[in-house]
Length: 226
Image (cartoon, rainbow, N blue to C red):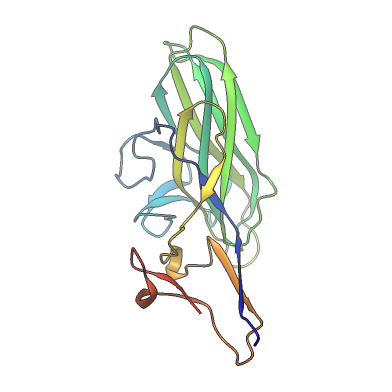
């Protein structure tokens, strides 16, 4: 008797919880709360990774200026990590993408900066987690600033957005990752697999399919049905 074999490959992971998120409004759900925006950046109700809002970097306009979203948090010196989820659409012309942490003194002067660039982020419409960690020993540090910066030059037909959501700033080094959407709930754009899991079937003699269905749930509202 042949057996069916379900192969599920983890595609993306989310930053591990367990470290207190220092950010206000990390999911951009509350308009005008916590975050600052510059140039071609704004909160949109179609740019979400989770919840109902996310941030759009408007790739259909010229983006060669200082386009960024950032938040300042009262904090001391030490080690911090900033993570954020980003989705680049197929026709997005991004040329410069970076996540950054700045330590500032009480007067607002920058004492130290750490930054990671992601200029090769694929435009495959999948959500990717970006991260940066660093340590500032300066005892004059009074604030930590978490920033995502992007530049682009629109080109081609129908240029699209870079979407941003679900930010996390915590004290300590990068703490690894854990499985995202472990209960197979419907994800972004109503597709459970587009952002989180890829599923394939092998050894099925009479065909078969793999889907996230509501009637298969042990908990939550969905589960995998073969």
